[in-house]
Amino acid sequence: MPRVDPGAFVKFGGLNCIGQLINANFNTVSDQQIIMFADAYILDRIIVVNASIEPSLAVGGIYRNPNKVTPVSNPGQVYTGLTAARKYIRLTLNPLISTDALLDATLFFSLTTPQGSACNADIYLFGDVIS
Image (tube, rainbow, N blue to C red; front, top):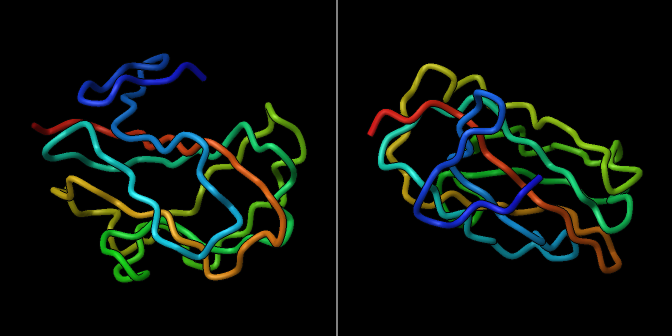
């Protein structure tokens, strides 16, 4: 997937890329910021792609707040399907946010279990822009 310039959302075949984290580190439990490109949005899907190795041990998700507070995706998400660079997985969204428009300028990618060795991947967030 092409890189998106921060500050502007881009359409991918009818989808609005409203946030991204390039080279997310899958070997840390620290919060990693995802800067969103819209002030208000409806999150529709989160795609993880371009893994450097298969993150077979990594577990975690996307959160609205630091320190793994208020999950946007399944906090127990596994990434074992990323067996090659062009493989992707779609994260399972938390049903509690599926009817809410979000206003968060920043979301957080955070693992509860790290990979245990160097591993990076790209995370793209898609949805509808409200403002």
